[in-house]
Length: 283
Image (cartoon, rainbow, N blue to C red; front, side):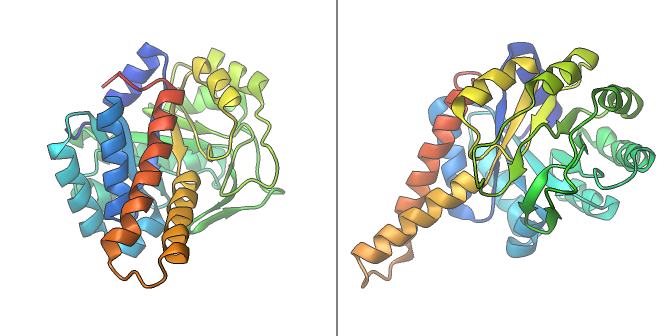
């Protein structure tokens, strides 16, 4: 069933677990995420980035996700990941997204608050949740690139003020993760996370979690991390499985036989994350 992201955020906050948010680019990825959620009896965020929308088209993304959610036996939120414009947010709301993220992290503090408030004015009356971002998470995700030099950690005082003034449903914070493939092991600033958690009750979101150790994830969730984004690990599993089929069966031309193993590989990644995040059995 398709539900507002707020419903998932609040349940996760109350239950002390995090919900996985997995990026959608095609049918096989969507099926892998949904099957994983049903097999683990887990709520889940399906999300589309600007790159995913550009690749598949918002009509296809929204259409596939809504059909999948209607058939699913677990609660699913369809989320815009890293929206950077008010126009794009409105487009997603009109196409039936039940959650949106407005990423104003590159803007000055007051401008970030202003754009977030503007999005909330449109989203909340339509039962669409709003995730905002404070602090710049390094790395590359589709059309968004933040260099190590420009990446900045979230200030706990600003986080408290931002959450109070905007009334956002969730806040993505920068504590040491990065988008894309890590060159080394990421080190999360747990002291900063603890301070942010202490100063605000807003559900917190961890972006760039692909490659973060299981131990670090388990340590972060009790501090109010309610949504964890996973994209790169699904892509890596997809690519490895496709390469294996092509290498072992170079004459194979049936897309179902090439992409089928990739779907299964991604499903296993998603299932493992749901168990790790504590959302398994919480649907």
